[in-house]
Every structure is written in structure tokens, then in C-alpha cells.
Image 1: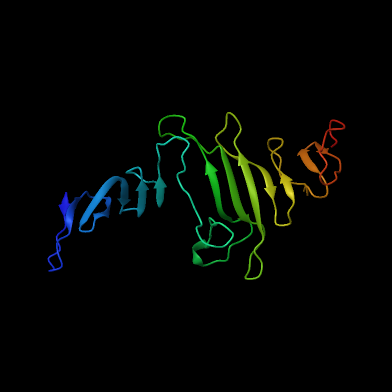
Image 2: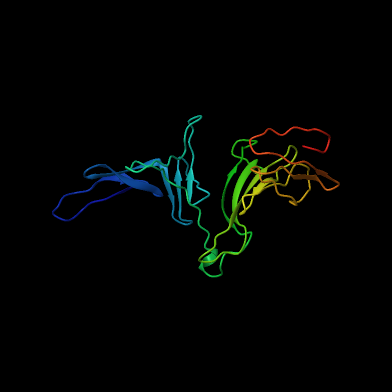
Length: 212
């Protein structure tokens, strides 16, 4: 336990603190701390709601169905805030095709505080080499099958706006595009192709075992 004293004639700063906790003003002349604000000075990590953060910012809430993070724009213009992912590749080599820029992943513990893998993910990647005048990107969607802990890519939207179904059958690779505004064409199996064409705004249905 520590205390702070201002020896200047301006007055005394009161309060006590605990090592590793973040200090804050609880009154105009008093510093306090809270167990839910933890600073890991060795690894430069901030924990909110826990004392062992495993990321630069680690937030834990015990309130069911609550928001752990809210980004709100309170200005006078029409539009809300972005959550921006930036990838700098060490500040040296230019980012290349296929590089992961950022993503969102989800997982659930199978025992208290114990995780095996991620159940779903969305990844943002470069779709080709980038430059000061070109930044082609793609979005990849992943899910994990039962009896597995490894997410598999199911759907990709590339820089041309085409949707590529990559996981309708386990083990296939992306080979065909489906631009939903003009056609439906999906490679569903290495040994056979789902055939057919479509018209924008119409619902697709199976007219044969391999035809939409």
C-alpha cells in the first residue's frame, strides 16, 4: 500500500493505492484505485474486470447479454464511428496479396476459462498487391464443424465483388465465382459442378440434383 503527498504549498494529494492497479481521482484531492482496473507493466497490457490480461486491452464482464464495448458517435453529422484495422508489416515491406489486415473471431469455453479453438471468424485480407493508388481487399467467412476446433473458410467476397463458396463440401478449394446480381454458379464438389444461371431478385431452387 502506498500514499501520495504533494509537498508544494498548493496542498496535499490524499489516497492509497495498490501495486498494478490504475490510479484515478475519486475526489479533487484524492487518488484511488479499483481491482477491476489492472495494469500489467511488464507486458504493457490493461485489464478491465480481470487481473491477468492476455492482450493489450482485455475486457471481462460478468453481466449476461451486456455490451463489452460500445463505439458511439455523438456529433452533428450523419454517420457513426468505424472500427479500423491497420496492418503495417513492421513498417518496412509493403503489404502483399493475401496478408491478413484484421478480423473478428468468436469462441466459447468448454470448461471454466478453458478454450480449445474458435467457432467462427471473419477476416479482412489484401486481394492483390497494394500501392498508393490501389488497395484491393477481400472478406473471408469461417465456421468450425462439429468434432473439430479448426475454422474452415466457407465464403469469400473478393475485390471484384464476386462471392466464392469455398466450404459447401469439406476439403474443396475456391474455384468458381458467384455474382449474385447476375448469376449463380457454385463449385460444390471436386467431382461435380452445381450448374445453372439466375436472374437478380429471383429465388433459386433445385430443378435437378446438380442444377439451380
